[in-house]
Length: 402
Ligand SMILES: [Zn+2]
Image 1 (cartoon, rainbow, N blue to C red):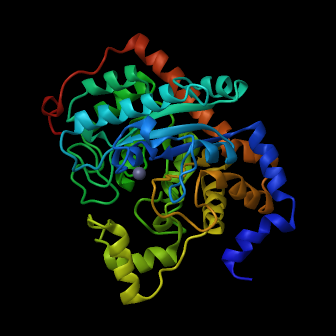
Image 2 (image 1 turned 180 degrees about the horizontal axis):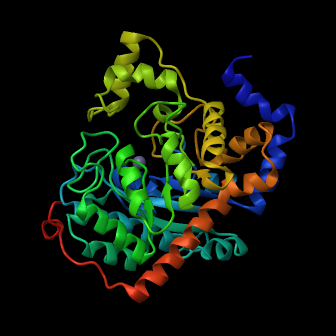
Image 3 (image 1 turned 90 degrees about the vertical axis):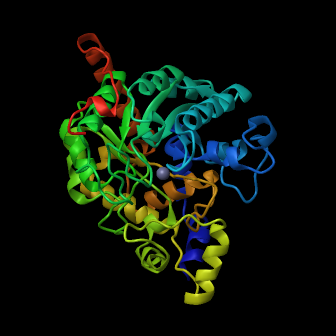
């Protein structure tokens, strides 16, 4: 039986899916990363209008909507206020995307609970809602100032991915040339202020060196909201073993992601042809056409599958510990692994983990308990630091050596 058929039929030959659904109804999935806000922004018809996009209907061909969030037993979501680093007006764009997430919450009050604290997960669960958490993906919107951090926090932001695919003036990206030895003095001030505010520091997208430098100075647990094991797929976006092991002492977590090029080594190798030395694709006007062109030249691309994602979860657990792993799908309206085409498919991933021998208690940790623990601890550290430390002020140029 080929892998694709195995995934399709696996749930029919055992009761793993039933076990997975029971576990997820006790501990609904807390997903670390979803780019729906950007999908709504660039949708040709909706153009950022949440009501026009209409999340109540199934979006065939896309990956995220309310019916399938329900089917996937999703209990909480970090929505990404993302923008490409190259976007003009970065501060404005970040603000617009935070606003878009808040408009999702406002448009469907019976579905989403605006979540600003770890305890909101339980509150949402008790009311049959999905806890909606706001994340900023990419610190380019700071425009090298610390002030926006406090404004974002006031707007509800509770996690920040330090950079995206490009290095900034203060932190190095996994997919770009290093400029700051990982993290410079201003970058350390950003980390300190995130600690003080009680915002989770997200090391997805940072260089391995930046991950290490942040772990050296952070006073609170960190997250890698959508990253896999570098030892299984050597894309620089994935986390190396030394960083994964340090998560145990830091108390943080790594959230396994579904992005095919970070999941499957054969696909990663196939894609090297179209990537730069850092594994980054040059911006294409039409990525789908670009992909078909590559396939015409080099033959069909290897596929990433749900089974590969399960392999990463097993490896992450072996390396970092079962208390340090979660799920960060990174559904972004693009390619996803076979068997994980949309947010309705989470129970099928958990069914595979049941088959791999995870206990129900450990599956609850992966599903939500670990990320809630991190949020709670980050909150407590913030409360403590705000009593003793004044807000960090200034801009990049005020940090000598930065
Ligand atoms: Zn990302």
